[in-house]
Image 1 (cartoon, rainbow, N blue to C red):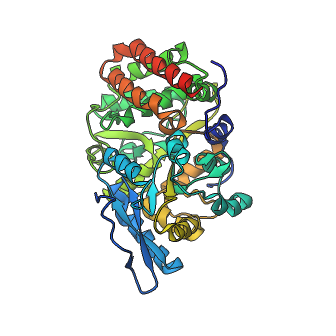
Image 2 (tube, rainbow, N blue to C red):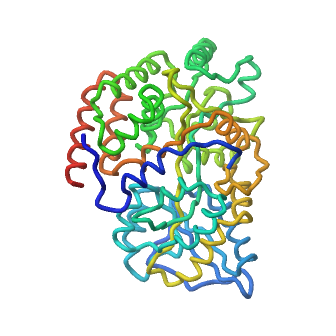
Image 3 (cartoon, rainbow, N blue to C red):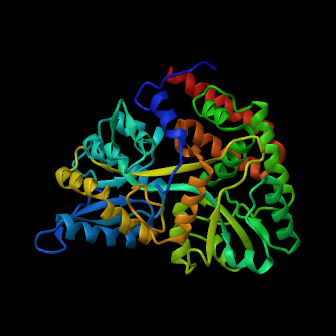
Length: 438
């Protein structure tokens, strides 16, 4: 297919900045209509509302909000929602009114597009300028929030997608971290022989069905093909995509994965107990999942650690996925000026050090040094391997394609013989979406 530019905003130049970052060097529900007036942490400190859909993160977010109140006299407190669907519909409905949240989290890339086009989020370019000039923040992160050369968010989190593993289980059985695909499958075979499920896999919540899809496709077909697929220049029913699904089908046939109905989310999680008990050895997911690990009592470095999944095709370069969840300021929020002050503070080393320490995240601010050994280990692997980072599937291509694709990929997980039908269905939708975009 020919090269297309989106009608916006998340144009091809911004996409390529976001989806191909050479990483070398060191680590770097309440209803919105029922708003109460500002309260006080102390006499001088206003408390804003921070809306998000990650209930288990609320205590840590509130702790950082208190620090903001102490540092800049404007704090914030979580208004968490129990599920993503309710959250999205409520926030979207509020943004055009005087009930818009002060601060709220969202999704990057194409999933910010409609909010920007509607003029409902504030331009934060000025906040970014000193950090991009100093090199404290990678420009690829900013590109994930950039439309028509304006930046509309700050990073609530930046997570690389890795494979978490049970350290004690590996040590007890003498397992080593796989660096090649043959080593990875040999490890999985050894685990199956011991009646241990090698890897977590779920379709609960719909979105997780893309995890193995993106990992296996980029590790068989490579990043250039991946980028082309995300921008409508390659087809889902291409033989390369089918080949990746056949690898996936083979792994499922060998018993490498858990029952796909097991929950793995941030609010309802049945996977971590299985991981703690040594019944599941590995969980492929974003670094944000470490917060749930720590909350469950697992110690970073001794209870769990992480590695990057090796390539199926050994001739490909090192690659991994990242996601970045943006924090946005409502353009029409009643306390916009105070919210802008918080967004500016959020980018500082002080804020990022505290937030990443509490959450176990890698810091997007390169000036921050962390104590978490897993975060440091991931950063070291990325630096040593010169990894190319690609924005994950959920945000890397238009939502209308993704929303259909995750359901079709879930169908494939349940019916592995449906691969060709699944890919044809996704391609039909993709062609219509790209055609409509012009």
